[in-house]
Amino acid sequence: MTDLRFIDALLSGGGHEGNGELATAEREALDAYSTVVTGVAERLIPSVASLKVTRRVPGGRRAEGAGSAVVVTPDGFLITSNHVVEGGEAGSASFVDGRELDYEVVGRDPLSDLAVVRAGGSDLEPAELGDADVLRVGQLVVAVGNPLGFAGSVTAGVVSALGRSLPTRAGSTTRIVENVIQTDAALNPGNSGGALSDGVGRVVGINTAVAGIGLGLAVPINAATRRIVAALMTEGQFRRAYLGIAGGPRPLPPVAARETGREVGVEVVQVVERSPAARAGLRGEDLILDVDDRPVEGVGDLQRMMTGELIGRTVPVRLFREGQVITVTVTPAELTG
Image (cartoon, rainbow, N blue to C red; front, side):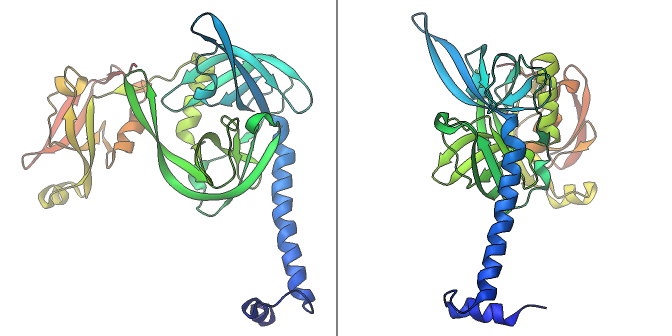
């Protein structure tokens, strides 16, 4: 049952004097918050490295950059942000126990802003990876990294929003990273590549951008990004399939909705010349319903399907065109920059 005395004190706006119960409740709340943050800090600080990145610049000179990285295996694999190591092939990783280990870049994926490096250690302390798909707005999160060169820095905040988008680019190719986490945990230059953790110390995001005061973004750790990280560790790259369309979600006309039992599809706005979609005969105003027998209700659905397994494989595409539901076949190609 709710303690009415606590509510009366809260509504009265009075001080703590003469109200020991209110003061005790506030101390308990503070202790609970501090317990969560200190617990995450103790668990994750040993697993987050400070990266020094050496890059060649025009004129043969070398320039140094910095960022953070998260240990994911005891034998030296670390996740970081692609933009932290872009343009550099090696550097050094420093840990709070005083070790400084050389590392090399083993894989980069600019279109997810993720990269994997490998340091020379064999007894590193890996972080536990969580699942950003179960996060809720308002949930406590903790950022661990090395902002402005201050190693082992911890900030805390909440999940401010979910489902944000982050535009990325590789050469002439652009892509949207979906379901990016927005947080008000303080992030500064150098935090990129560091950990965003839930309240029990599981890494749910890799900090990637400072979008403004009190507004930070992190690439989520989920099933999709786990596949990317695994491919970077084993193959050095993440291969993506490519259809060659631009489009967006659109409600289905009533006749199509009745026939398919669906409400939304992806309208083709543009077809790239000489692309797999063009060769398959897709055209503007087509409404894509399914690809490879899997429903498509948004551009994000298409992006998630375009993995390396589809490259070179002919798949059915069901679509609504000029009042009819038809099926065409398309052979996705590999996406290159």
